[in-house]
Length: 416
Image 1 (cartoon, one colour):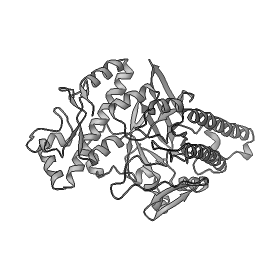
Image 2 (cartoon, rainbow, N blue to C red):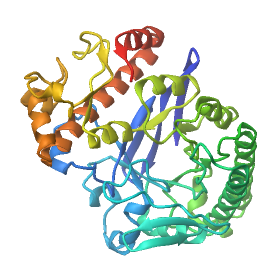
Image 3 (cartoon, helix red, strand yellow):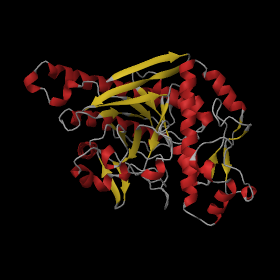
Image 4 (cartoon, one colour):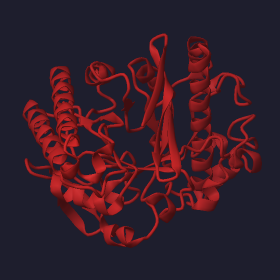
């Protein structure tokens, strides 16, 4: 696995490339990966997703565990890769995560109810308790390109108690230790890379301690593999790739917490430079800037999808693009009566399918009559606009014009 990173001021810019079979897979950063439900973007089919220009489409698809846990046998019997099964296109990278950044479109959110031995995952058949052994067994059947190590992230709420955070810390350390121990004995995941989740709730002290503990466990894991490399007859086939950790995800923090950025900084401060830093969950453009400056590399597309599910369109101007028009709000509520006779596109200059073919008034009508086309069009628009924003962010960082780009974006946007 090749990792290229260079510092541009206080920011990071680069890419990681690794080979799987005859394919070379690449993740560029700062960047955004695609949030999915079992490989599909909510409200979009493969055909409608193709309306988003190829240059903007992420080549990494995030697949939450709860969306596939009921179908492990079907997926494991498929002769091709997960990417081919979900028709994601090659060379899409599949990344299975424990948590889901997208709310369920029906029903109430499921409680977590984690224990000292296992994490609760809610599939179609109800609550499924997943411990490290069960989790690694499941990953061995799915064989994703990247998967997140099991962790107790049940601390993402403002009022999480100190007792719950301490239990989450202890459980997650044990889950990571057990998972690494099991992985040493398995060869099915020889081509899969790991993402350990960084825990600690809303405690900066525990977050620093957890990062230290995780790095020590991962270091011991590598030493074990190096030791066996000196004895070829005892070496499992998968130890040719010793360092299988591609990056770390920052988990278990309420995005609305007043100390959110400081908590993220506490988790990533001591991480190796040659590892990706990933923050899941909905992040507004203003928050993206803050997290980039905190050392984060990778985000997901839950923000534009959740806005679409709530009848809102992203309309903030993006400097340097055709969407760099007059100053305005960051989002537009299409259910507002002010749009009833608004015969203009969602955003002037936008090249997305929705803006090129429909008006705000038409979207208002679709929402008023509960037409299923409304979230489809809004998702297409929001995804393309959010991904275009990340493309401009990446170019701005690479060219050393990040501060100018940031200032122009914030000056042209009234954030709600």
